[in-house]
Image (cartoon, rainbow, N blue to C red; front, top):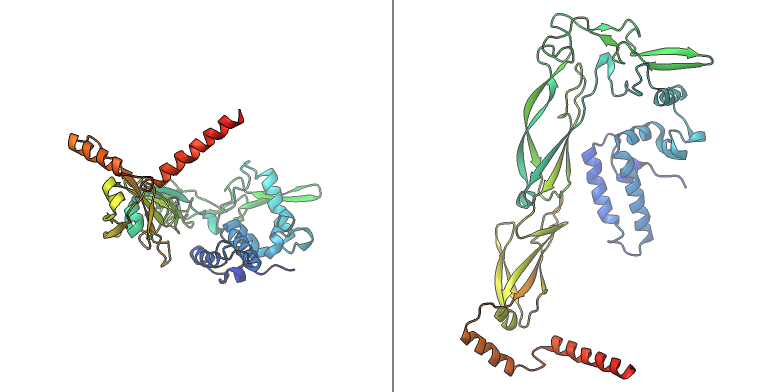
Length: 383
C-alpha cells in the first residue's frame, strides 16, 4: 500500500509555514490520540501517520528532501532510496564527495547555506527567558534586549566600501566552486579563494571590515501566548544574526522556563494546591476560599468527616491550553492540622471527647488495629 502525501495527511498546502503545520498537527493529534480513542485501531493508524508526516515536514532538511524526492527520499536510508531514486545524480554524487572529502580548505560542506553573489545566511540564535506561572496563565508581551549582528548601515550589507562593489572571484569565475579531475572522476569543491561566495572584495567597508554586518544591541517585542509550558520554544523568523554581505538573517529561538510558584504546582493544564484545615472543620464540615490565577476566589465545601489527603476538583480553574479554548482544572488537597500548644482546658475537652468516642467514630484506625491483632494471633498459632 502506497503512502499518502504528507501534506495531504496534515491537511496543509505545500507552502504552509511552520506555525500552520504545527497547528494542523496539534488538532489532528488531539482528535486521533489513542487515549481519546481506546480500542480504535483505525484511529491509532491515523495517529501514527500524522506523527510521521509532522516529524518529516517540521524538520527543514527532511522537508527539503521530501519536496524534492517524495517518499523515496527516506527509502533504504537515503535520498532516492536506491531503485526509487529520481533526483539529479550529479548533484547527489557531488554531495557525497563533499561530505566525505570536504572542500579545498578542509571544512566539509562549508559552501552550504550561501546564496548567490556571496551572500550567507546568518546564524540562528537562542534566548532563554524565565517567566512566572501567572505570566504563563495570562500571557504577556516581553521586551528583550539582544546583542546581535545586524546589517551594516554604511555598506548596506555588501561588505564593500561605499562607491565600490565586490568583484567576481578570479579563481572560480563567480561560481563559488571549482572542479578537479582525478582519473575517471570529476570532483567539484568549494572555491578556496572566495570560500564559496563567488565574490572577492578588494576595498572592504571600514565600518564592518568587509563582513557586511556589525554587532549591536536590539530591543525586540515578543508576544508570549497564554498557556505556554516550561520548555516552550518560540521562533521569530529573520530575527537572528544578520547574513554575511547582505545574506538573509537567521532565526531567533526563545526558550521559556517557568519559575516555581509558592502555592501551585503544575501538571500540563492542571494545577495542584495543598491547603491545611482545622481538625474541627474536618470533623464537622465547613468551607473555605482559595485564590485562583484568574484573580478570583473559588469556594471549597468540606463534607463532614473529611480525612487528610482528600482531593477536591475545581473544574475550569486550571491553566489555559495553548492555542485552544480548553482550560485545565484546579485540584485542592486538604491536610488536617493537629492542634498544638493546648491549654489545660483544651486538653480536658479533648480527653472528654475521646472518652465519648466509639469505634464508629474512628472506623479506619479501629479496623486497622483489629486486622493487626488477627495477624499477630495467626503468627502465634503457626509456631
